Image 1: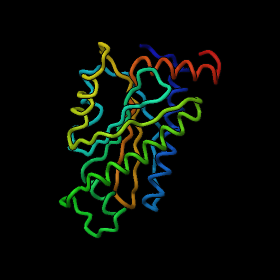
Image 2: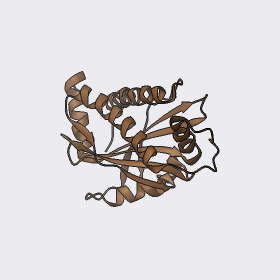
Image 3: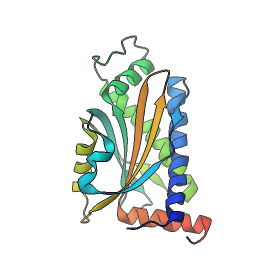
Image 4: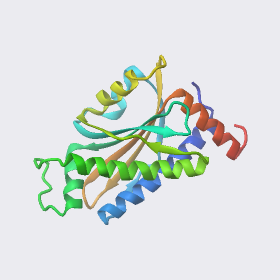
Length: 202
């Protein structure tokens, strides 16, 4: 699928709105300011996905997007392991924020639930449709391995994937998080159609 410049800009703005809400949510959790990069949108060859998401062992909370969307898609909260441990310990009031500390999986999943719900609520509100996260799956793995597993479960024969990537960073808490949105082709087409109705034909 080739995106026009107007489609690219509209998708980028849509992702920006959702990410801003997720960033606000994270900021409220940490009581600290959050720096946010605007969404990076790339049309990638599936075979090269590992080049774009890194290979550091990370906490990944994976949700399928449900509701009034065509066959859904996926959204992932990606937290490098050290960031995941710091985030949980800050929220739990634990003074041990070393990378060697234990990871509280249930707390990480709840953080993912809150942030992803904020992202989907904002984007769904703009598009005027229902978008809900499925029950989450948790993995402690390299990001590209988790994404490859997701893509292998798709019913369609996919050679390319559209990757939305937003980086959230707290300088005070030394935490980095990425939101990765992987819309499958039917969902992407539906979003583009709804955006065109909002802004006019591309």
